[in-house]
Every structure is written in C-alpha cells, then in structure tokens.
Image 1 (cartoon, rainbow over the protein chains, first blue to last red):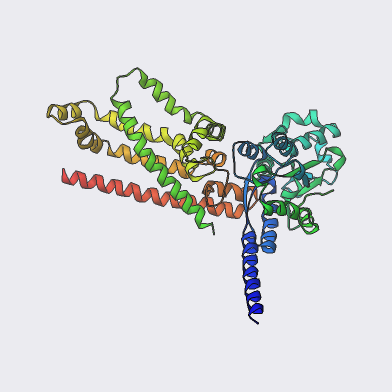
Image 2 (image 1 turned 180 degrees about the vertical axis):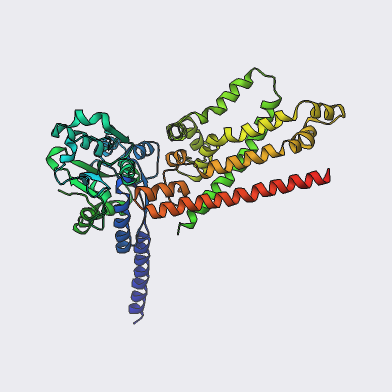
Length: 255
Length: 226
C-alpha cells in the first residue's frame, strides 16, 4: 500500500513537472518581420495561429530592402516573410538564415486598377490609348514594379507609356496615388484592391500570368530563430491547407 | 481606439529625448555663442548636418554605426550595454542626433541676443563664470530654452524615418505613433490611420496651446514684478 502511495506520489510529481514543461513551451514568443504588402494577411494568420497554439507572435512590418538591412545589422527577428526571393536567398548565402527553411509562401498577382469604375476594361485595351499618367512602383526595388514593366513590354506599349510613369517607392504608395484619384490608373497588387474577396470599388484588369514572371514571395527561418521550436512551427503553419486558403482569399496565388 | 502603449511610448520617447537634448545642447549652445575659436564654424556645420540627410539615410548610417559590426556597436557590446539598435535606448540616441540642430539653434540665438554687456557687468562685479551663466545668461535666454524644448519635443513626436530604420517597428519597444500610422496605411486601414493622425494633431495642438499660454502668463507676471 505504502509502495503504491509513493508510486502515485512520484508519478503525480512527474506529471506536474511534465505539464509545467508543456506550459513553458506553450508560452513561446516568435518575432516575425514581414514585407509591408503582406502585413494585413499575416495579422489574420497570426490571430488564428495564436488561438490554436497559445504562442505569442510579434509582427514588425517594413519594406523588404529595409528589413534585409536591419537583419544584417543584428535585428532580433526570427522569421522573415519577404516580398521577393532575392533577399531571403541573400540571407541564406550570408549565413544569416537556415538554407532548408526557405519556401514560397505566396505568389503576387498584378492588376491594372483605377478607382473610376468606368475606366479600366477587362482586356487592358486602355493601355493602347492616350494616357496622361500611369502609376507604377519603382521597378528596381519593388517586385510589382518589375512585373508591370515586363507586362507592358510584352504588350508592346512600354516605350509609349514610359514618359507617363509616376513612380511610387512601394506598391503601397502606388495604391495611395491611385485610390486618392491623383493618378487615373496604375499597376498594383490584387491583394490591395480586394476586401473580403470582393473588388473594393473602381475597375480592374487582372494581368494574365504569361505576361510577367511570377512574383514569388519567400519565407525563411533566420539564424536567430534556429533554436526556437515555435518559429519553425509557425513556418510550417503557413503551409497548412487552412493557411493557404486564407492567403488565397487575400488575393495571392499559390502553386 | 489606438493602442495605449503606442501613445505612452511616443510621449515617453519625446520627453526623454527633450530632457537629454536640453542637457547636451545647453553647454554646446553656450560655448558656440561665447567662443572666438576657429573651430566654431566647423563644429556648427557638423552639428547641422542631420538637417541635410534624409531621415532614412541618416537611420541607415546610424544602423551601420551602432550595429554589431559597427565601431560604436562593438564598443557598446564590450562595455556590457548590449545592442542598441531595435531597443528603446537606440531610438532615443537616433532621435537625439536628428533633433540636436533644432534645439541648439534657438538656444544659441538666445545667448547671442543677450550681447556682451550684461555678462561683462556681472564679471566686473566679481561673479564667477558659473554664476554669470545661471544668474544672468540663463534667465535672459529663457524664451530661447522654451522654444528649443518645444521644437525638440514636437520634432521627436513626428519622427518617422530614423525610428523605423533604427527601431524596426517592434511593438511595445520601438513602435511609436508615427510608425503605427504607417502600419495602418500599409494594411490599408485608412480609417484608423486618419483617427491616429487626427488624434496626434489635436493632442499636439492642445499641448502647444497650454505651453504657449503658460509662457505668455509668466511673461506678464515678470513684467508686473519688474
């Protein structure tokens, strides 16, 4: 009887210790750096993830180039969700990120958009007409800008339109220039003009995929997060069917 | 409803930066106003440089300087202070550098406006330099100090580019109001961005109004006493 009691006591103590270990795992903190264009989707994903796991995710937004510079200079981020493939690959090359962890979490879709519901037709014919201005984001720094340039080149309208460019420094700024009506139309991301899977006013032409090379957005686990099991778990969570559906609902493609 | 920590952090940053700047800028402005040294123009030009560089560029260089591979960064790690970028201390340093010219200028002008005479009179009455400063120069230059503090505080409240670069948008640590507005705009939450920007304007206006009224009030009282 005594033995049984002592056994029970020991197992109970072990059980308590085990649950303590589990709870300490549960309250993990994950530091995520995200490209500005994916800030809103990631907040929604994080909300679901936190509900499911009890972990806490801290999200910092910025432009991909700026975040890259910060990570190189010791920023405390553990997971990096970039707007391109180039920057995560560079970080892997420089030994600041885990090589096996890199994957494409979203594909951006390019649209020609205007906040005037009558302006943009469903075939992009408007590009052949005389335009005063057309907004694009800087093709050197923003993937959506580069995609817009190659789409216009493939349509044979680039040389005609180039003098009419109004350049934003990010796709967010280009969206503001068009939504405010300062520029009649321009190239932005599909994710920006959708609200609850519906077009949020204006008119758009979904640029066909064959006109530009895919805008791949890559995620990578940074060296800072190598020992954080929760950070790895969060990256895995981004690849679940449920997350993929959510990402699609926000206007991104996934192959 | 904006996050209260964001508002608190912004006010804390602006207060700390203003305080640090008053302590640093006072001797600097005093020296600049009194010296005949050939170094004066050189130092003056050097401290005005942050006005020229775009804030993001200034932030980037500060990041290189304070980062783990930078000269100041390795020094701070050796001294056991730890890493400065992406911490509250880091954004305080960045804002101090960027706001210094706005605080030194009005102070220096106020000291120079006093002229040589009152100071010389005090010295002939055997006042020590320390006493000359505190009993003559400082009271006469008080409006300049007041303007400097206001400019420093307001400039820090509106600081964006430098704080985003050095601070890294970390909630509870370096995410201040201007960064939160940027977050809302990037997330296309224009309504919340408008609220926050409007709130920032109203708050700043009321704060400035109170301070200016107080200043006028003290001036009136001084006149009555005189």
